[in-house]
Length: 72
Image (tube, rainbow, N blue to C red; front, side, top):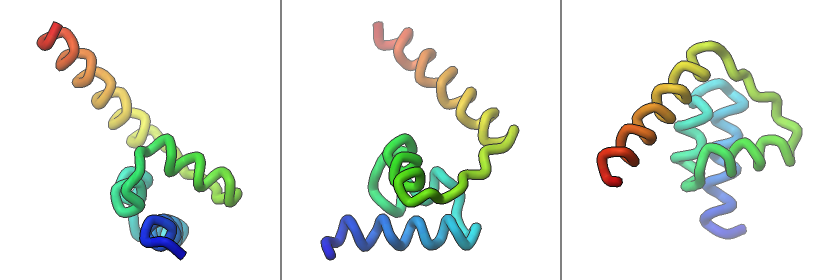
C-alpha cells in the first residue's frame, strides 16, 4: 500500500464515521473534491450533500469567478 492509498483509505474511513466533511476528507487524501467524490463512488459510499454544502460550493464558484476577472 502506498502512502497516497493509505491517506485515501484514512480519509474515507473518517468520512464514513462522519468525523470529517467531504472537503476535509479530500484534503486528508491529498486530492481534489471531485476526485474524492469519485473514490467514494467507486466504493459505493453514500454522500450526504445538503444545502450548506451547496451554499459553500456556490460561494467557492463565485470567489473563483471574481479572482479570474481580477486577473484577466
